[in-house]
Length: 279
Image (cartoon, rainbow, N blue to C red; front, side, top):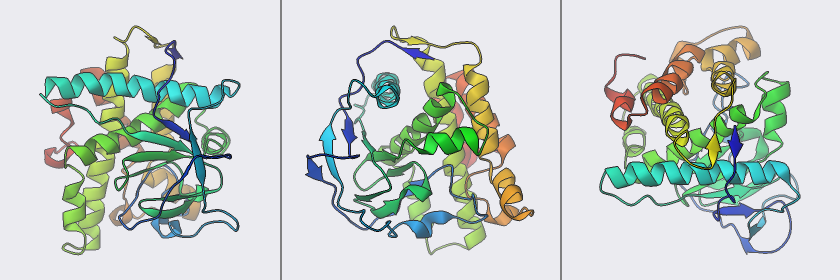
């Protein structure tokens, strides 16, 4: 993909240098990609920072001589433009999330987290957090190379933001402690697959932006990434076994299906995973 815009004004660089401190708090984090790399949900890593991490200072914007940071800033800007229009069609105003770049570990309104949890969205402060070194793992460990695979990850996390401000994420929070672990995991899968759909919807509608250019192979890169991070595939790689009742993000096939559906339809109304039988 190519993006010709100036980049988002909503990026905070916490990889070093002044700015404000990200304060801690108490609500849950929605985690993507590395959640099941060891065959289990890594939410427990939240609150376990590396030695010396945890007092993260951030500054607005990203350096002009940092191509990768500039790229993710551009992706965020494209999501802002797409969701601005989607919310306008709903008769609402889209609240732009912040994106925080960090190294090793970070303090958020959801508590502390290490880079091991992968990119995540914190509903408590409406921010997407990412350590850009994650993209090395995405390429080298999961075989999902390419800039559009990277963009897919960001669009997925922004999808969680959309769910949060529309109240969709409340379905999962309300179920916490009220249903069995298996049922809770099933609802988690529905939430994650909808975020994949929203990532596909972004890709569909971004094609109509004047500063965006979709290139040959881009969608295949996103689908490769979705395939690589399915619960079944990650569990099989990690333990040699697959336990469907423990799935929290969806199978490779499900993740590819919902991203592709979002891309092919571009229709928000087609993304109700909670009431769909196509899971």
